[in-house]
Structures are given as structure tokens and as C-alpha cells.
Image 1 (tube, rainbow, N blue to C red):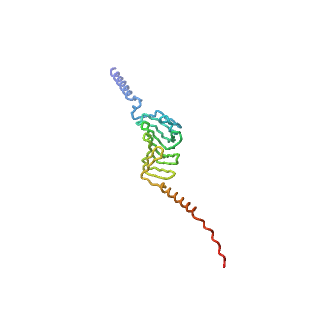
Image 2 (tube, rainbow, N blue to C red; image 1 turned 30 degrees about the horizontal axis):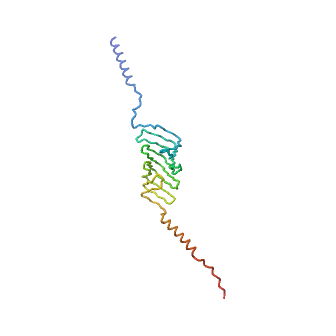
Length: 213
């Protein structure tokens, strides 16, 4: 009888031991400080952005993420961005379009990537695969091949820098063509001189036919 109870007790101990080993805790992994979730994700964005109480930009985007957990904090536009810039009188100055954009809110730095195109109301056109816009320094720059077209010239090169309004710019390692101001002035002076000579020269009377002998 004692042997029977001993066998039964061993069987029960083995059963509970195996049951405890098979149990698993269904818990999620610990949150890593590097993990981040956007505090706001919006779709179909068409909004105005102010700076120091003045309307400066219009943002049009398919998706806009605001993430304050990442270091540094940033806005993320994964599906493209169209940005319209205004002057102090709310007149449009510049249009900017790209495939992907990041705005670092602390540094006030835009990082535009993929088919970056800039258009100004003065007729300037800029295109590149990457463009940085530092709002603290009021500067635009790119370390990738850039193509610049204005009503007077066309330039392309490996490095580009400009002020925010694209009125003073520089392209290094350039190649292109343009008409300098001196050449334009010389051409204009030449045309004016030709007009003056034409007006000053007397008109020759038509030749009279000679009588036949």
C-alpha cells in the first residue's frame, strides 16, 4: 500500500512540475529609450504656420508626424511636402516641393530630400536631390548636384548656398552660360550707335537715267 501511495505522489509531483515549466508569461518587451511614437499624426494637411506672430508659410502634405521623443525632436513628412513662403505683407515669395522632409524644431532646420524643386516669383528655378534650410542663419544650402535657372543665366554645380529669398546665391564647381552685364551694355550701345549713324547719314537721291546718244 505504501508503494502505491509513493508512486501516486511521485506522479502528482511530476505533473505539477511539468505544468509549471510549460507556463509562459505573455508580457511585452521593456520600452527602450530609443523607441519613439509620434505624438501627433495628421493626414491631408493644408495649414498656415506663423513665426513670431507673423504668418510665414503654408504647408500642404499628405501625412504629417510630430515626434518630440526622437533626439532631436522633429516634424516628419514621409509622403511629400509642398511649402509656400510669404513675405511680411503676406505676398507669396517662394514655392518649395520635395518627396520627403524633416523639420528639426529646436534647430529650426529643414532637411528636404528627393526631387527638391524651388520656384520664386522672380522667375528663379532650383532643383536638386537635397536641400537644407537653416532658419536661424537665414540660409539655404546643398552639398549635392544642383541646377539653377534664372531669366539671365543657367548654372549647375556640386555645392549651392543662398539667402532665404534666393537673391544672393553661389554655386561652386559650376558650368553654365549667361550674359554678363558688361556684354549686355556693349550690345545695347552698339545698337544705339547703329541707330544714330543711320539717322545722321543723308539719304542719297536716286540716280537719274542718262539720255541715250
